[in-house]
Image (cartoon, rainbow, N blue to C red; front, side, top):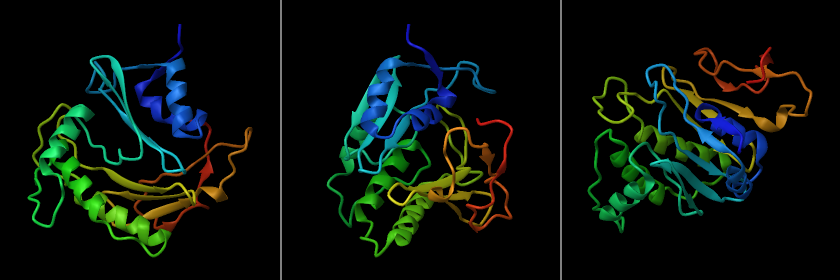
Length: 225
């Protein structure tokens, strides 16, 4: 019997055990992802994950009617919520090829936001440096975020975008914006000590007083997870 990993710990488990997308996909053969109840969703949620590594490899992993479905390759660069990824790709084809006159959907539904994300990603200019690249991507994420109070009907009910993040895998830097704060913070992962046996530390990223580089603001934590 394969060991089980709860959906809510799925991403953390892959980050802790795999260095590349290929390793993650191979590792999934040895475990089973288990849907667990969470407050408000006693039957669990049909979660999916997008993974990418520093070499630029990408994959979208989801379960459709209990079956593991993987879309692997650098061409899979956008993901929103339901429906299944195959349906998202089929809907996107109605808008291809992209052009200046493309009429984009403007609702808050995951399918509409998927199309807008793919469209604006297609047109992002080449950045002059890594910081500008992060800023370009953050501007895209703002565009496809769901504002507070926006009417929304879907499998996962009504949820605004609570936070936005951009991860620079090459330089190991993570940018984060809490939707109830005007500030963007970032962490240089190279400055943190991940050696086995080291004291666990944490950062309350939702603290509205935080701004800029917060790599030195982590404090000891009694629990590693």
